[in-house]
Image (cartoon, rainbow, N blue to C red; front, side, top):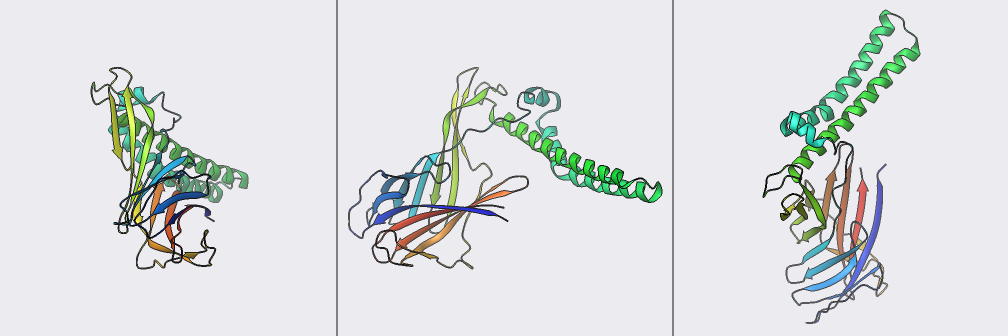
Length: 283
């Protein structure tokens, strides 16, 4: 069963030709006044990691720009062996091995273990514990193959990331600043861009690289989308806040699971209070 975690940050808006910037006094409120002006800036809890985010709302276009600090790329088990493995086998072969170990070998190993245990049981009459051991051993080998496939994939990514584009030295670059994440949401589109900052330890070259890093983003399906309602935090009226644009959906895929993040935008029809609600679901 998928686990869903929800939390929200709220903001207040009025239909006047004014706007001001303010900092949230706690992690529950985004105290921004959104009006008919061009831009409103606010500080709020990070939608992902819990640190401070900056939210800009362009009322004329209904566009939200959410920026915050991301996370460094983490280490992995075979990182120290990556230079020698790439030197001996090359990135293309390592990438191919990653696909084989991740998707081809696991089902073959598990299937072979079942067939082999069935053959021994029907032809040699081996004890039940032997059959069970063979099947469990085959499943364990399948899991190990998936782990190795993930490690090989990380090696290929590390080789591409850590190559200096100035001196072309492999495995020479390291991240020297926290990456910046920018989410751009309009009524009709949604995108996420991550900017990472790399520095070569040999020549000192610094470079910023921006990309989506495989994150899948899309708007909530308009065919099944029905505006949800919630109680207003300011005026207290029940079901007064309605979604005023389609939700943003972000999917981060892993080998066996995916993290689905849905961001919804609410506005009170009485006092203009605005809420941003984030739902996370791991499936």
